Image (cartoon, rainbow, N blue to C red; front, top):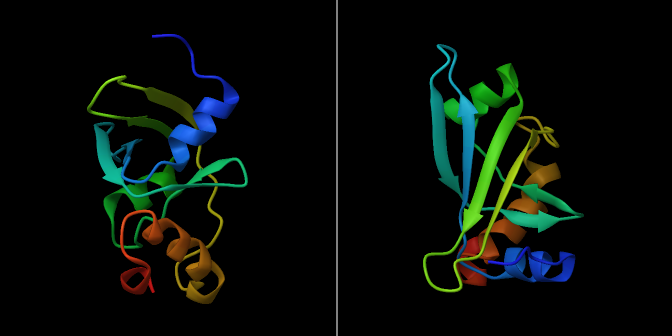
Length: 115
């Protein structure tokens, strides 16, 4: 498959339904992969792990992540990213991140459910 252009990449990431499979490392060094809802926001792949989740604790301890976003059907497009997660909002800052969370939820749910 040919490499996606920047435009194709943005269009692919904007399509509803794709999940981001996010890989982190547990405290004992074991890899952990978790599918999460995401949105492309200001050029970044944004997702919202919950504070009690192992993936949140992994990112706080070691922000290095691997992310794969793909599709099951042809043409089998995919992106793979390795990088460092940046925490935009700490737990408890719900009012600050609520608009971004709604944007993410609306990709996967009806608008009234996302609210």
